[in-house]
Length: 94
Image (cartoon, rainbow, N blue to C red):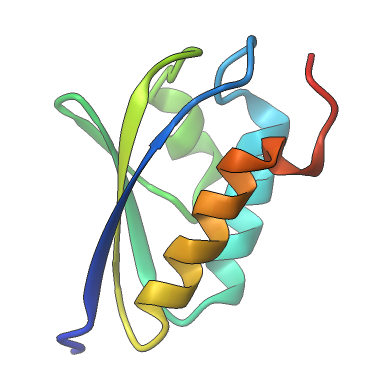
């Protein structure tokens, strides 16, 4: 168990929302880390390492999400995720 917990806030910028391709990028990033990351959208929450759970959030454009990580690289993985959201996940806008 790790005491290293971090939280960040992001906003979904993609017109199509947090659909399959960005969800896959998020999940792959989390799976490479050593921390557990949870995404909160209103009252809903999802394991950020699971594409299906991320999709179940139905996060549309403009939705504010809270990312929480717990583990040895919590700060680093959240910083990377914030950059992904800010840089459109390395994908072209669709």
